Image 1: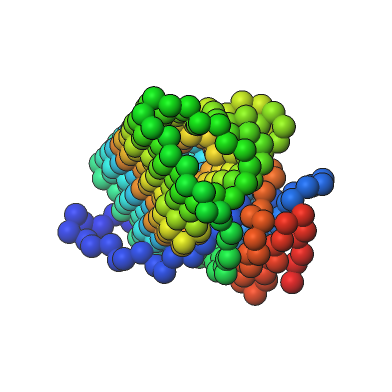
Image 2: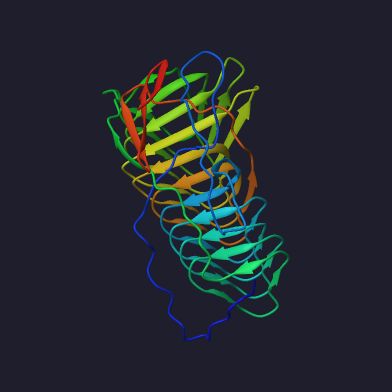
Length: 320
């Protein structure tokens, strides 16, 4: 296998039509509201080079763009082009389109692209590099109906707000505010947290799940602090998510029908999937964590994947 380098005037094609995803490749065990999940793998070559979606730190139906100095310690995959700035550190790269690796970028493992692999100077690829590979990104189409409430929550500057699980409308918190959340499912429209805001997530009694039908966005230097043995899940339907510069977040985030982006020097842990495009600005870090349980929204959601579908209801999951 080889790297094919294009000249600097080569124009990469536009991203392919966005697809979608929820952390597949896992199966939830035990009681409680969980989604039955079935393993899908990416067939890359006749030599059975595969990767499970549960191994991915980033998954995009569209493009993935990474600014200079970004570091990701697990594989990334996309339907559209993947491009990086300089001095980026990655492990494995998979795409149905083209790859551009900026100067001094290091990929410790393999690079597979159905299009061209293009590199700047002093790029190191520790494993195999293959242009015109046979990589297939699983397609996830969905219909969703998400419930939310009528109560708007506003936190003025320097205030503290404590909320319990339930249905809400919009959440908006000014700068230097603190939001306390405990175990359960929160359904709402839009989420905004101002500069230097803090979200304390207490999972000692179970996971915290945020389901949004609008935008999820923060200003700069926001911190999500999780305590307890549970996890934070963020599901966004029909819109996009943006994390401001210097935001710290550990979560399994899935954006259905939109994009995901993070500003400069974001500190991320977990997995971040979007059916649209993904952008991580310069000097951002992503440490991968595979979440082994997938809480479901309480409202009906149907996901159709390559001829299969998942019928999801509260406290019940069925394959059809």
